[in-house]
Length: 423
Ligand SMILES: Cc1cc2nc3c(=O)[nH]c(=O)nc-3n(C[C@H](O)[C@H](O)[C@H](O)COP(=O)(O)O)c2cc1C
Ligand code: SF4
Ligand code: SF4
Image (cartoon, rainbow, N blue to C red; front, side):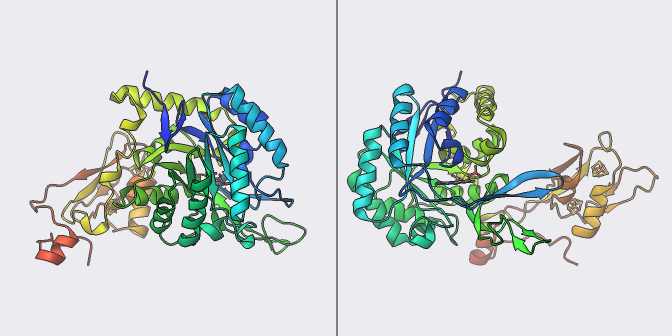
């Protein structure tokens, strides 16, 4: 059986699956049930000066009958007394010594940071996560994303935390920035042992078209919230990869954002995460989703001969490059497997209206369309809309041209193949 033990900046857990700091990690009873279900770690719901929450506070995208593909919240940090949280952290750690408990923190002054870090460590925290990400409510008070968006402030507060902490410190980054890299580098300069990303994305989830109020509604008003869930995964993956491939960035990463199953988790791991955190999918489906995550990752590793998790961490990073380094002479075309095709012709509509008008009705009268390969630009659209898995494949066409990138073309005039579909 492969070894799933994970190490993120010195925080060790029996597997890489952690609860993210959010409602599922709000109390001792919950975290203990999550550990029983199989979660390897939990980032406790952010502690700070307890706040008062509003009602209602969540919203979700409803898309083609499914609710929750994207999720939105205007909840703040913990609304429970600090004493209660610390007592429950202590009890949970005592009962589950091998699981990782990371305490998420958000306070304002240097003195407050010093005190809350000492109390977290006394309670038994294996690590700390500095919440520099919350995009609503707390940023207006000079915390959360207000810190995460300012590299100098991020570096300074991370420095304070490192000065006071004996356990590893992760900095949780906000995605509400143009480029994540300077913010990861600021955490690194501050001495962080790792970063976690992403927190939620500033958003309005929708508008009540009868009441003329955005959602979620609080007594006839609304405000922007934080977007998360499956819909944000591509953004989170990109930010994780952007940090992983930056030559100046060397910290471990705990990946977060839209993870719903083992495969999503693995994608974060392959792009450089040594642990992953989940919030929305647990809120929607409960702690037991981790059983499939563990089994799926173990099966994947066994089938491919990977013995340890660290053999996978960052394995796809070298293959992530700038657009200018892609081979412009590489050519693919779509091919339809007539024996699998059900004749729905969705590919034909998509290619005609949204691509390069090269899928046509079959002259022999069959419902299986034909592809004019000379005109196909290999865009993938038909494969994306085809309802039958593996019915359309994208096949490389040898064209006799040697690989040439845009960067090479600009520098040395490398020869590019004649353009298809540009008429
Ligand atoms: C209702 C709710 C409350 C959250 N509270 C916190 C919090 O207190 N501290 C924090 O760092 N992140 C908080 N988050 C953000 C999550 O930890 C996580 O970064 C984000 O939801 C993305 O992960 P997901 O797509 O798996 O939900 C919260 C998210 C939700 C939905
Ligand atoms: S979308 Fe797929 S199944 Fe439908 S006609 Fe095209 S190839 Fe056949
Ligand atoms: S790959 Fe794009 S251009 Fe080629 S057939 Fe499919 S949709 Fe049309």
